[in-house]
Length: 219
Image (tube, rainbow, N blue to C red; front, side):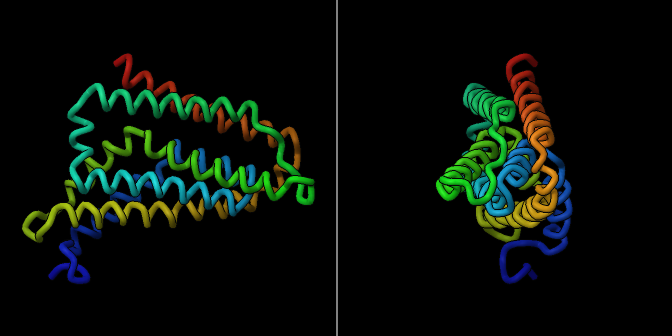
């Protein structure tokens, strides 16, 4: 009998949750982007960044359910273009880490406008860092189909359920990371620490960008 009357096999679904959880907790560009915003601007902005990542995953889920991800991967030029665009975007985010301003103190003039702009940037960075990451497309193609049971019914519905499950796991894990990062903000009152954190996260993002370009343009 299917789980909650949905076309999902319970043991297979449980195995998927374990596999997906292992993938989600592995650090990647999304993690770095989220932690940067959480450390620099606090809990609210960090959670907005998490929401941006989930919006990107939502697009990937829709594409996977509709079968478009297969089309993208089957076209080497299109897939390579997405990979290069994603690498350049991560590289740009990394460079911003070396130019990031110091944290504004509460009560400064223009604080509300600055917070709004920060939230908008956080959502945008989370969304595009995920949407333009070709590894996410490959994740959906490699992981999700392995846990689809055709005998239970619509593969599209099953893919959608599995995709939404990944989003749910992401929300739990990344929200935890944001909350943990929030407790570290008091150490960021030091200008030296702020600069060091921004530069370290920037360097990591640039490293991801170089690796993505290398994998898609050199190899």
